[in-house]
Image 1: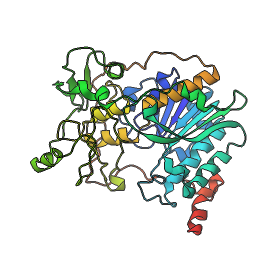
Image 2: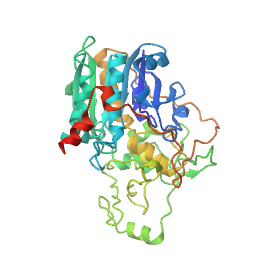
Image 3: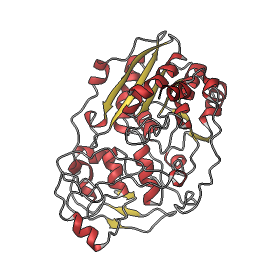
Image 4: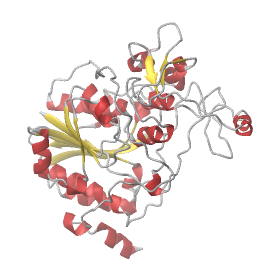
Length: 402
């Protein structure tokens, strides 16, 4: 049976499902930039560029080609994030309702929804509750619950809200105890990135910068699971800061914060703070603050960020640093995703395996689309159904309550 990924972005959630032994049949997203490398990373999954608001359960089942066993995804979080404006009229908030509408229409054995913890706040919780109400009493729920990727072995502290639903006709709700068996001590920054230093530059391919690990010796357990067999990886370009900026960074101790740019300095024996996405040109091209390397006076590279988030070295993002960080910042850590899917598989008594997802050899292909920060985004505008079409009136009610 097949799984479906909604709002797939670069595939962190999908990777966790694959690593837990599930098969992701189809993945949906509207952004051609943030999904530009998805098909290259997941060649057995069909990527469909579509507005989730315009999909139906019937079309999703038809595209999967078989019964859909599970639906998972992280609807856009900007309208709920506690570091954003939390605008109750932000049309992206409606996509949460469409996620649950599709679950109701598709009727899978389980679903997993991920979002920011701000979704549980008073001015947003009604949106979540009305979405869950569409499911009736068919699903036994775990959550909303806040889970941290670091508590499942990641090298980054990333606290996110999850709701996990199990069809009552199959089993009872997932419990804390079900998840506890997959908890692990956090990896450290040292575990994640120390072996990347001194990497040797190789020839670029399809716009991607390529490197090979030069350090001798066996990597630690965390890095060994992420390192490619041939030691080759992409995305290691170092940002060349102005001399005065690099000098300023030099005064920031491990665990400290640059008072001007607010860049946190990573500590070798700690975890990375939450990596954030920033915005595309359609939302002002805001750059998320990137952490500083523990020793070097620079921000971390794309590959270092990917390692901290839990992506393997064979996973490609985008040729540009800007969009690669947007992909990583928008992603669910594959490490916590795998733990959740393994817990679900055990609950459903679905056979899972201990073999990590295998990336096929990289083949030369056209470079992904490149979005300039200086031009208007050329993506088609979202045509979302009004909240009334979902049976909710959240935006109007909250706005009137102001």
